[in-house]
Amino acid sequence: MYQTYRSIKPYLFTGFMAVTAVVAFALHQTTVTAAANQLFISEVSFANNDKQDWIELYNPSLNSVSLKGYYLSDDLDDPERFRIPFDVIVPAHGTALLHGEKAENLPMNAIKLNFSLGNGETVTLTSPRGKTQLDRIALIAPASYKGQFSIGHKIKNPDIVEISYQPTPGELVGVTAR
Image (tube, rainbow, N blue to C red; front, side, top):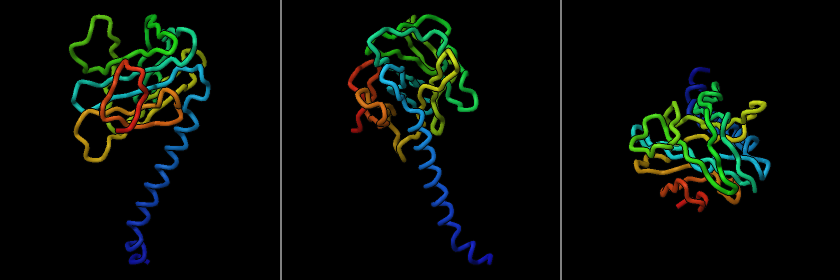
């Protein structure tokens, strides 16, 4: 019996990882922006200890939206980790950029989060009313990649999450794999 378990142990681990990936993908797909007029996370860039972490939110609606009272987090168990305390207006079809806790050399009006981003975390965006999770993106660094990159939803099709090796904060070009 012990010998049989030992011989199938690598297959059990591989199966477990595959099931975990499928479940994570399914959970993501159920929380991806369903409504065309709902804020979503368009792009996230992180590199451990790089001090360049940022989250970009996109407003696909025809109206400006205030971010006051919305929440961002990098912890699924604490979705209210950072509450946007003031009126940040995201114009129609525009973006808002929020910087990680360790970001440096930012403009005076930059929004700085109370957390940094790291590999394996999940960024969540939660509404101020009803505490409804609007979007989330799992931060998974490409295997053995050392440069700057971002993960995000395509602007024209938020159901698709891709990696870009040329992050574009504030540019409305969408996120495309390169």
